[in-house]
Image (cartoon, rainbow, N blue to C red; front, top):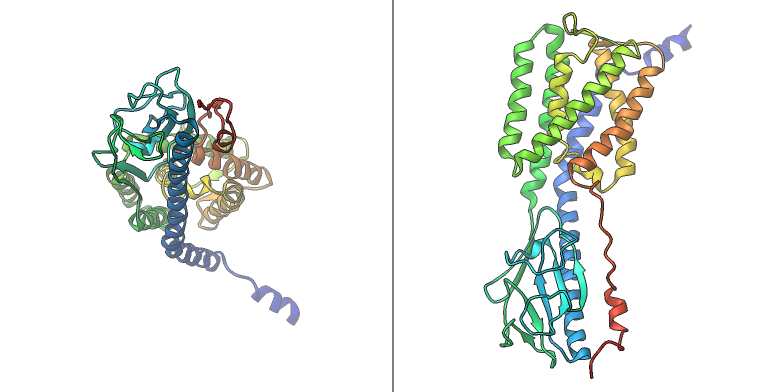
Length: 355
């Protein structure tokens, strides 16, 4: 009897487990700025190395071919192999043999290298002398498009730690909405829940640099949530409290709709890390998704039986949600293969170099 009593007292209540999870989330949130800063520094070093490699390639090829070799900014469209007059190097650049010495790549001029878009948050811009291009002459000296001596500056920078703190605020904002629903719904604080949810979404859209992309991500999140919650209600016989009035009782309730709207605010912010670690993200999302719905059961907001709800949640959160994050951040766009020689191959080619 005493051993059974000790076993009964050795567990944790649902509230205690949720408090621990909340503390873990806060601690992880505090660690985000440092991790994000380290990641940004590494990304900046990689972008700087790519630019330096292109400059070395251009100079070595100019000396080898005894022709001017130019670098110029290009558009983000991988199908384009022309110089871009906007002067935005962040969208990528070309290294080509400037046969007619006009500073612009012509269709018959040899393309030596194409560097793709540096990605969101990275800015590479030149001053007036190198804004539209830079190159090296046959003697290895830097030259402008007109052949004059060139001395310019290319500035490379990334978003600072302010962005990292925005990620923390975004994650904590969603947690605020979640707890407002968990604690407010049992007490019928419906007006407060609607106000907190819509205020969070509105502030996120207002502070976003690309409100249109954020709105699309939120709409996609709502679509996924509608499919998941309706499947739980209709296929897995999950009951929700409070439910929609008839005849909409068998579809996603209004408060879950608001929660998915606010979750959509995290896709391009605090959940963006999934793009870099998709497998880890899928595993963690599968666990977190099941735990969040199980917590709703503990708060009396849901009831279910059997294994079907778990199967639906694991697929939805472990597969569909990571795919949604990747899509929202443009990581599912089909890449266009370029049949271009690499810089290492080019450096070994001597048959095309004029003498």
